[in-house]
Amino acid sequence: MWHEARRQEKLIRCQMIDNVKRNERRKVFYENVRKDPEQFMQIHGRKCQIHMDPSVARAAEASNILRKWQGDPNILIDRFDVRAHLDFVPEPRASDDDHRGAVDLEELQCEYERYRILILNEFEKVSEKAYLKEIAEKEFWPDESGSNSAGRAELEKKKQCREKKAAVAFSYEDTETVKGKNEESEESEDDDEIIEPDEFGW
Image (tube, rainbow, N blue to C red; front, top):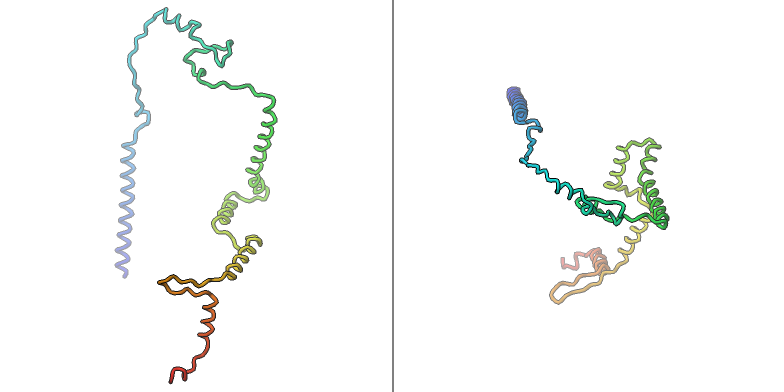
């Protein structure tokens, strides 16, 4: 018994030493393989010869290249300017103020609902972890005793309705007759009667 325990202890110690050595070798390997990310940076380019042509420069500065932005003649932009692809932004109207006020009110109510529980928990000095645990308990393990009385009353009504329902006996041509509850109860009452041994001819 003692020798077996000793052998097992040696095996476990050898495995632990092997794991430590393997981890050290892995660490050395990864350190050798790992490189500075800047070494992976690549820059590609090609030679470009600049031609100094005064006519091209004058054409780039000409007024026929400039376009009106959003239909405003006072604002001129280059035809390659990305702002040319922006949609027209309409000016805000006075009638939109009421709509904006209603939206702001809704947003304020939403913000209130969002942070109400956090403020209450802070006031009651309930930690976030404890409250999240309570929420998880309510979601995954609902407490039946804490359920409202209306729900319980509904369940009781359903049980009573289930008991009142009648079973109707019906048979197809090639199957046995299904007996209703009343027939079953009558048969069980008949079965309860004591059979005298004289009836069997004993």
